[in-house]
Image: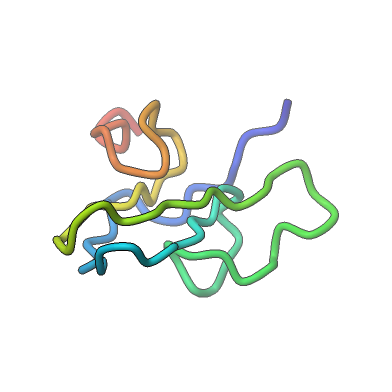
Length: 79
């Protein structure tokens, strides 16, 4: 399986709103990081839906290597 492009070597801090859906870019090609803009079309990756359970700041993975997608787990530190 192909690997996603590294969009950033740091996470993206986003203030999310309870009950709102967010679509995290899994391919790393989106120009609207950390969210999907459709750049994956025709490729092996699809966006991942994240629904906020509370209103808070979350850290979406920018390197696309996290084992806790779509959220950052610190994997970017090994790049």
